[in-house]
Image (cartoon, rainbow, N blue to C red; front, top):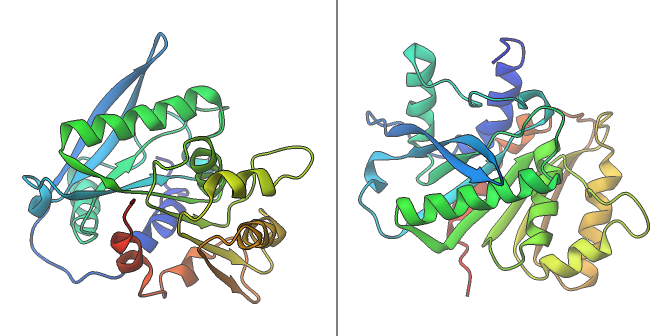
Length: 249
């Protein structure tokens, strides 16, 4: 990964990491692949030590931003960088799925949509994960991906976290159709008021649309904060505990 992008990626991922206390264990950061059509797509999955033999493991799917598109994985696996990544991911208390969107595509691209869902199914089957405790999270382009995937696959995710994301629909009412498909799936939305990359109106309108259908919505907007809103998200101590408490019926 480009060294300039690494701090931005870690910033986006830190909202999964801040709440837990340190420990000396590090689980496995694995490279796996799925087939979509004629193509093979690699992805990464972290399995914490304490969940290696669990039959009730929760799963957090993290959708990265536009700067991490490509191939080869979104986090380091070897050397000191890989050790640091494993150390922090161990704290989360969930299996972490790290898809990678191909260059020139988006999470709403049909191939990428199919890829993510196949990766979720692969992890669920291979690591005995709890199908009622699969959570979808994302930052920036990944925040857009959260709304797209959750609306296209209703009932698959127990809760959603979108950080500075928005609607992938291009015309007409861009929010109500998504909200209706998501229904009462618990969501937590974060956005900075002065975001110049993704307008805050994207998250505001999504929250309004979800509340209009009596959705289960948490919404945090930070005055004076721009696109690096994840620096505020990490101060929300209840985020990950809230996430891991959610379950599908």
